[in-house]
Amino acid sequence: MDYRGSDTDALQMLIDHENTISELYTAYADRFADRRQYWLNLAHEETEHADELRKLLPLADKGNRVLNTSGFKPAAVNTSVSYLRDQIRQARGGLVTLRDALSTALDLEKAMIERKFFDILDTPAPEAQSVLITLTDGTQKHIETIETEWQKLRTVQA
Image 1 (cartoon, rainbow, N blue to C red):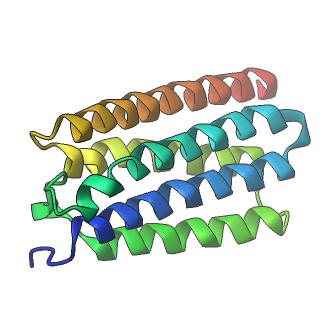
Image 2: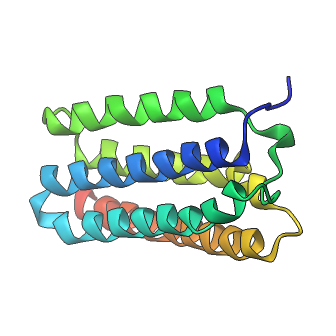
């Protein structure tokens, strides 16, 4: 079934998703004091991603088509947010190891690329194209930095 909501609603869902990822990374920062700054940097960048998406709201509010919502699935975004909230609860409860946190973060970031999460921004609107590039590049950078942390963890445990 095709998405029938507004671009504004879809953007808000994506903004909320990015903010929830930021919240998860902040919970990891609180959980892992020795890697606090690492996680806070990732959290800050996720907040910046939300801010990038937020820049499109005025265009969408004016009725401009800035998104390609043909394949947009709100249920998938809602499921991801629910999963993230569960992960936040676990991190705050002290139930997460560093290995768990890195695995969750890497899976999350990779899924956003593999599932073409940002294809919704693949439109002729130059503003959307700019945000698409920023989010895709930022997510790819997160994958690389998390993989580097994984390497460090493996080296220490070897």
